[in-house]
Image: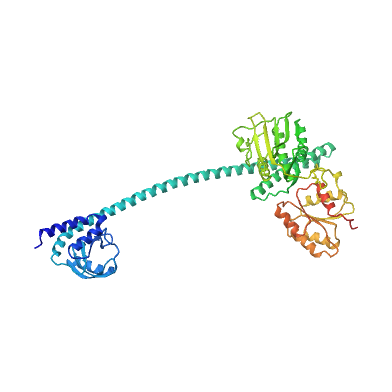
Length: 560
């Protein structure tokens, strides 16, 4: 019969096993009390479908199959004996007792006392209940934590979905705004291009009927004015395309900014005079030189002056002031015009932006000019700002460009003269092409006849062809002094034509050639030069510029 002290000692050991933090030590002490080396309790895991080590005991045991056999045998028959590997991997004798609910207690050691076995069998249901409830509680805690984590993930996902939904809504709104801006821009482009075309086509039709000198002069003046307006619109669109593609290039040189401003004022002055607007010029000749592209800087000044004249009422004033401010030269263009609303000031330099873009607006334009101004100024390392007290109070645009640290002075020997673009020439300003033979290859009948007329009035002998085959027939019969060829033509283009010409040229002949085309990108110019052209000119071309280009390519006496 088991003594009372033994029972009390066993119960104390069982109570010590209830403390999970000290369970390993308590299990070893419990086993030592009964002559064994270690003790491991197994309980049934319903989710797995077998008995596993209870919480707090080693969960991975060497020789798992031997452990499984002795545990299963004890559960089935009440007790079992065998050899297992302890947690250190050493083979040890083992004695196990088990119950039908899947609880098993395994004692490991060399000597396993028999008298205590009935007591352990009586204590086993209590230990099984303890560890099983602990497992259930632990699993519930894990499930609770997982549920809490899942809830946190769900909340985070919901927040992300809300943020994504808001972002998509903003993107949709931006896309709709961009789509409306595109549609408005295309409608504006259509209007601005069709308006001058209406005047051009209408006057051409009238001049077929009206032959008197007054009508002819008025019609030609109107056609010329509208054609130039359309050309400026197309140039703005092309500049916008180059800016978007990052392909706008500058021909940088040392420039007297005052000369650039004067050239722009000369271009704008006729429009100002027509509205009786006084242009007040206040330019400091000692403001200094800047490094930049002459044509692009003149475009900047011309855009600012044109805007000032356009938005200034008849009889108003435009002031142009240039001065040196520290290491910069500062250009200010002020007008007494309509002014700018404070709400629109931040958007003045945005492309497509117009204070009034309605169908009833008083002023025409694409809304590209000031956007191009800002980009060109920034390419020159400068800044541009706009100031206006409000509607009806005028506006001031200020351009700041960095000064050159050093430049050639007018008294230097190696002075660089920068030629300003001349005003559009008339036919009597043409260079003399007398004795020069020119071959024109152009598929468009009107363009071909126009080129023939321009060159013939300058004294050139002109032969014309409507396609590459006809042009090659003329070349085979006689070599011209200069060739002018379109690029895009049906069947065979200008690149192919000039390559065929170069292949057939005898060693003693090299005919200079001009590519005259509506393809105006930098890559188009390079392709034309690579194909064999000497010069690339963009349509529409000024007659005087075309004649001068032909003259420049024939410095020697022409062949008769």
